[in-house]
Structure formats: structure tokens, C-alpha cells
Image (cartoon, rainbow, N blue to C red):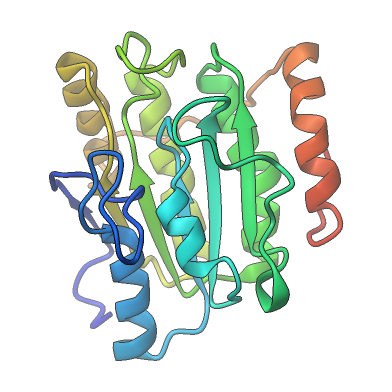
Amino acid sequence: MKGELENGFALVRPPGHHAEASAAKGFCIFNNVAVAAQYLIQKHGLERILIVDWDLHHGNGTQNAFYSRQDVLYFSTHQFPHYPGSGFWNEVGNGRGEGFTVNVPLSVGKTDDDFLFIFRRLLYPIAKVYRPQFVLVSAGFDISAGDPLGGMEVTPRGFGALAAEMTRLAGEFSGRRLLLTLEGGYNLTELREGVKQVLLVLTGMAKPDVREPKITGAVEKELAPVFKVQKKFWPVEL
């Protein structure tokens, strides 16, 4: 907030996004990103914070913390059906917070291109309108190919591409203010390599992936309900 740093990565354990306001859950004790968002609102007076959650599991705790609010927009990609069972595409917030929760439930097998497509075609247009003042990321590496708890196929290169998308968002909309915090990741080799690629991007030591992602017709069909419901709130096109 002082402008001395552009970004940071909190290498913390345990993860946090399942933790509710009054209960630990799913390996999580304190909800790190939720606490950070509330701190930014209370201590720094921010009015628009974007939380991007690319962990394998849906961040039920984060969603519930801000489900009726506009000052935090929660965007989650996650394997579905899977623990904790929440995060269907029709969960969009309620009351004043309606439209400020974006859930992208995904079947197994999603690749670098699939995630990059979602971030560019869905997340970016939403962020362009919302114009967050700070970007927080629940960076889960259990979407890695070979993670024992999941079925996704993201490579270290893919994590670098996702990090590049986050730096682009922060650069355009939040004065480069970007903070990632470690969530899940249970294959230690893939965790190490994924985090490494993210750090290389954050420090400017790796070039961003600028190729145009390609998705299959099956993935496009799977994403159609998400785009349809979000089109009610944001200018998104599949």
C-alpha cells in the first residue's frame, strides 16, 4: 500500500480458504485471504478487492465471508463435484452482493489452455468493469498434473501463465498491488516447480505466455452455463 513493493507471495501453511468465520475446516484454520481482504478494507479504506481462487477445491469459507457484499469480488475455478461440495455456477451472491461471486465449476482433466481461456475470457472482462484496487490470489497447486487429490492437468508453465494474468490485471487496475498466498498442493515436486514458475513471473525473470489458448467443444459446452449466468451481471462472451 506504500508503493514500496509491486507484489508478494505468502508461502504459508496451513492453507486457509476453507476456514469459516468461526470454524476450522478442510486443513484450514484461519482464512488468510479473507483476513487480508478485511484488513485492507478496515485499515486502508479500500472499496473494491478482487480475490481469485485457482485452488482445486472451492473456497467455501472465502465465499461465505463476502457473499452479501460488493466490496470483495470472489472468483473461483475448482473441480466439481469435489470437496467441499459448494461452488456451483448459480452461486452468485445475494442481496447487495449478487453478482459479486463468480464460480467456475470444472470436471477433471482441465489443461493450461482451459484455465488460461477462463482467466482471459471471463475473469478479465469482469475485472475490467469492477476495477479492483487490490488483487488477492488463493494460489492452490493441487490443480497440478499428478496431484494425488485432484484430476487437473496444469503444468508449471501453466502456473506461470496464470501468474502473468494476475500481474496484468494488477498492472491495469490496481496500481500493481498483487498478493498471492499459498493454498493446497500435495505433490511436492509439482508444488515446488509450480511455485517456482509463479515466482519467476512475479519477479520479472520469466516472459509471460502470450499465446492464444484453445479449448475443445466439450469444454466450451461445460463453460456455457457459467457465461450465461454471469452475462446478467458482466459483459462476458464465450
